[in-house]
Length: 212
Image (tube, rainbow, N blue to C red; front, side):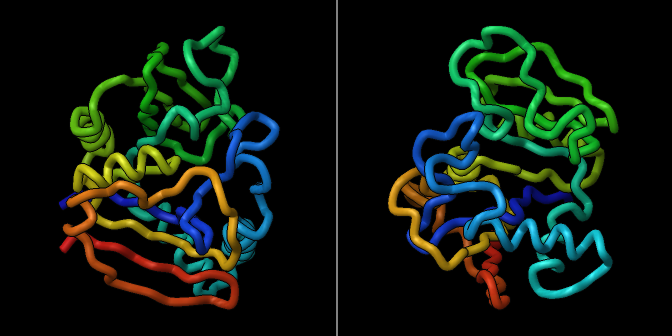
């Protein structure tokens, strides 16, 4: 049966997935850059995977793309702009050929027409509730799993509703101190999950949460 999965989501020791003031020149907020201490493991694992290497970090990184047929993300992950779209010139962080190669459903209070990109990626903007978006994503995935890509607010929302089957959490050995936390205010939703796997590499600790 197809699953709802989260992969390669990295947080600091104090639980932050991003810093304050996320914007175009600082997508992860103040003091959190791509490739720095928080995401260095991911950059390294992606390079090692491309070179055919193996290892704990590489293995977890590769699992994140296996059997995924559709992705769900939040407006903040798609781009830095907030509020109504002033225009439709922003086409994502990934260039004209994003790495998804399937339908990507973007949660936003301000829907816009679907955006078809090279390589088979189509961004579909929706203000529907998570359950409705998930149904559309499963239809698009055609028997494969659906990935919740992020950011933290969207993952938190789906966790709170008990809609995620597996969550791969990566804990990096640093403190951020302020910003956007991943696991706050989950209420009773977190009671439906257990730690099914935990392993550390020399750089990070990988934790897999699974529905009980």
